[in-house]
Length: 85
Image 1 (spheres, rainbow, N blue to C red):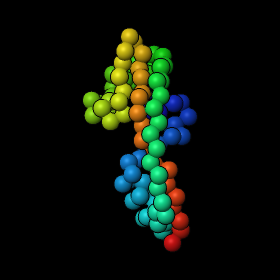
Image 2 (image 1 turned 180 degrees about the horizontal axis):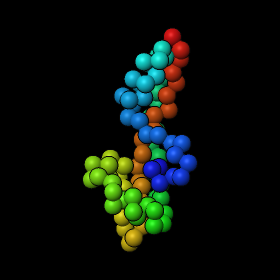
Image 3 (image 1 turned 90 degrees about the horizontal axis):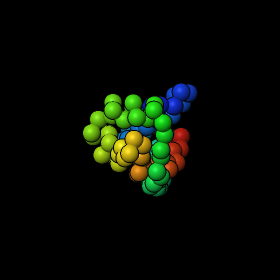
């Protein structure tokens, strides 16, 4: 998502998101983790970003480059409900 021009998307670990909400008076009511799988082929901007991506990030999101195309294969998404304490 770093390539997106509008910059409105942020990625947080489950722990980071919990700490952010809890530090502002929220409690986690429930969470369901779903997995998104999609082949995501893009152009030159993604190839450039791929070169700047660490090996750890590539492994975490299963990002590969095959035949000049960058593929994102797996992202876990925490669908979380927080309630105000």
